[in-house]
Image (cartoon, rainbow, N blue to C red; front, side, top):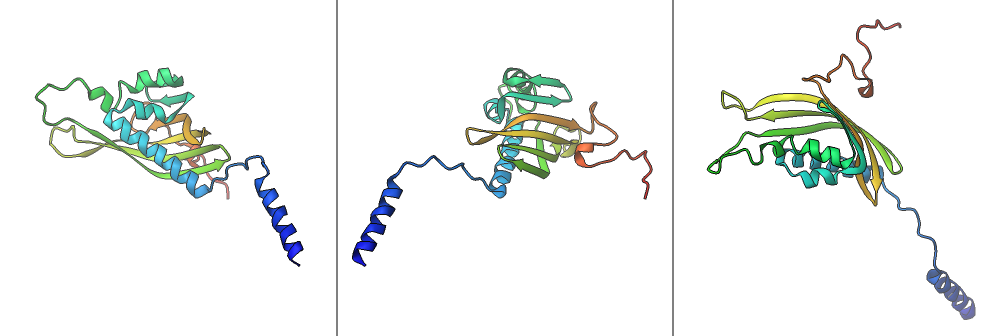
Length: 190
């Protein structure tokens, strides 16, 4: 009996020390969803703060930004465009003795996320509030939604394509199929 246990122990030790190919890294949907939501939140906070380096860290090198100001291809074009937007647009324009500044705060809600291995899609509503008002009160400024395509690169989620619909500006539409909406002019056949 001792010999059998010793043999089993030796076999187990030999197996444990053998090199095995690395198992594919497993990710749970909950973990991926949390990481993707955090990516969107980091992006929003960085845009409002004018933190271009953090904004750029959320993008794949060949990312595409499709928004109200046009289509930006790759990190260089995205950096150039985002350097003139949000908090970055305010930087350097304030007098040296400024004690406050106008702000925009973007919020993102209602994420609908689908993960397929190392790619994902995400749809989310967004809205922006501003304190840049004549009456001194905060008010809703814009609203819209994101339609995102994401990719996991070196273990981190990045935006591959981000389409920003500003439903208060030029790229608004009657309906958005990506959000499950149908053309409201069409009658429903039951």
